[in-house]
Length: 222
Length: 222
Image (cartoon, rainbow over all chains, first blue to last red; front, side, top):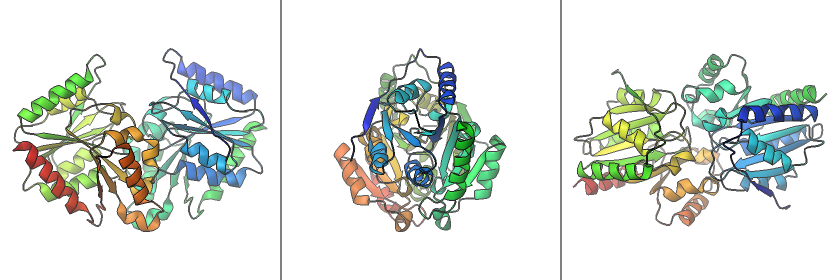
């Protein structure tokens, strides 16, 4: 297995995060690379979903992954083992990425030629919602076992995301999770939010999601 | 249903958090009230476990609950509906409680006569581990659907907790969660950590946990 690149990122408290984020968006637009920021609780299944999704689109779309974690290389190692170009950002205690950290990560990646870069943000439903990373697409996972009350408890996250992916739908048979209630609560916070229901384990719903993502990327880079 | 008390807490950046936490510990020791801080990811099942656990010990132990959330009263309302004295701390964006916020919460509670106060911290595996709340007992939940790699990704949380409760064991039949690996990873970070395996849904493991907790409280308050 290739050695995973590990970047220790530091928060620059002086940086104007929004300005930096806008700068990254302009730069990546010029390079025809779509940057997507993927967020969720720890353990909602970001890494598994990404590996399956990338496997389904990689013949048509060149994808790179920027993994973020407080203190581990586990996720990037999984990606690299599957042949997916990935770097690991270690935030050293910070519970989110900001645009400055993403810029450091992009500097360590071979961005040219990539159509899509996916940030797997730190597992957290709070802080990542508060910091613009420079992504043009914000997506979140909510896994069935976490429960259907999450839009009530973490409204900002649902408000800022373009996409909500409800994952681990294979657990629905053992759960009292109310899918319609989640959709209603999410739409109330964010009427434009696009919602997918997926089981990465069984594959249910994966194709609708990857078809949509592929189309977003091809529209962006053309 | 009784109206839930809602306290807007603010972080006092000037406060010396550790000093404040030590002060709270002395104060609560004198009042013979054990303060326990319960942490986990969002949706790991803190509220459900607490309601079931308190139901099993409330005849012998007087329990109060301090719920913390970014922006909702859902959890405290559930507690109060079950006849459990509870207040809600709304952190207004902060992803953790510190000792100063807990002090504000205690000021709004009727602490006298309570043997045990349980803080249900904000759902997050990062920030809450970094701030001493003044609790004498730190406990965390890890739910089976979150996966067995969490000690690798959130080492600080596992290091600072006295107790690890592995929850939602009813999902084990649908999961590749490796219980022995989790125990080994947690013990490597924290050799003294006490581990329980619980399904709040089926009741499996609840009695061992509540017996232990009851004993901790009775030893502390006598």
